[in-house]
Length: 260
Image 1 (cartoon, rainbow, N blue to C red):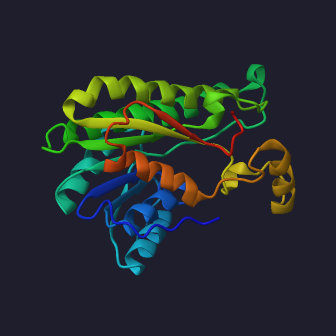
Image 2: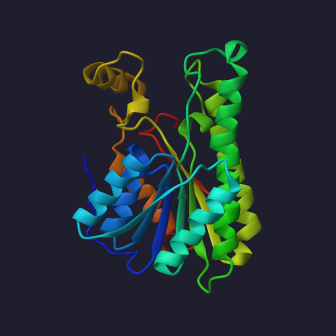
């Protein structure tokens, strides 16, 4: 199922999405653009970001690509400044950038380098992004909304060989709740979305075909299929919108019932 919105909840607002060069991040960026937002897309590589911008502008939207490394506080401050300089404000931020390394390695065999990489990007990267975003949003009369992308694996991991990733995504969920309480008085609403198996490359096991994945999902997910990128984006846009004005510090799990 593909979800296409005809609403315009973000007209005149600026949305920033990290990790927007593909997959869920690109889908979120496109969804914000469809609902009228000016979209700033960020990532480490120019080419994928340029494609995301081309898709947005090709549909009549406005977008800006900024290369940034989420492990660099300086890069993230520069990213926020670029968004404000171009569009005048930062109303929404989605911290989506993340990485899964050492997949399939059991806990005792997980290389330290993989562990530290996931901590740096998945946890420290979200913290540094939050700090840069809140610093801007707390100066704005209308504040802002932040959505962090966690994972259903961080809620309840049923996959061997993903302990390091699960730990970092659980940390994103806890960080989101704590930051939400810390900064709601600043007018900044912070929440998280925890996707389950989604129609991206990450949902495939090594060497698995689409048919194999579909067969596996029919047994692993009560809904019987992976979620679409558009369905994850719809959850993010809800939390970022005025429809969720009283939703603070939640982790919205979108996983077809696999953690129910």
